[in-house]
Length: 127
Figure 1: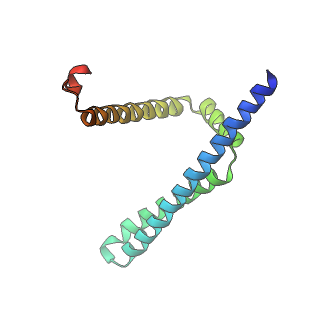
Figure 2: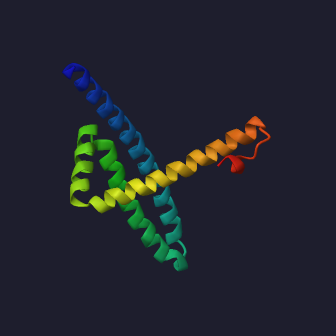
Figure 3: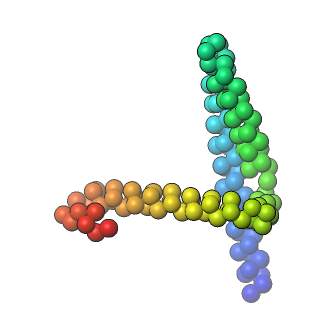
């Protein structure tokens, strides 16, 4: 049973590592896009304040993207556990927000499937 447990843990850590690397690459791509926007904003005198805000956003996105791409699954889980111990309300709030977003996405998906199926019972009547 320990071999199965270890294999499952390795599989989960591998999935976390793969997912975080992909997310990190997307964050870095977003940072590059925002950097181009900041550069364009600097050309206009009225937009220089917005450019400095964009630059700070780029810096934060680049740090997050680098962390996600360079960290393995084990480190990400350890950091999440540490954050949960040090700031439990942050973790609880994050879970609540993610749960709410997930529920809205599921409801929207169900409504779309209902419309596509052409059912005669209103979706709102069933909810």
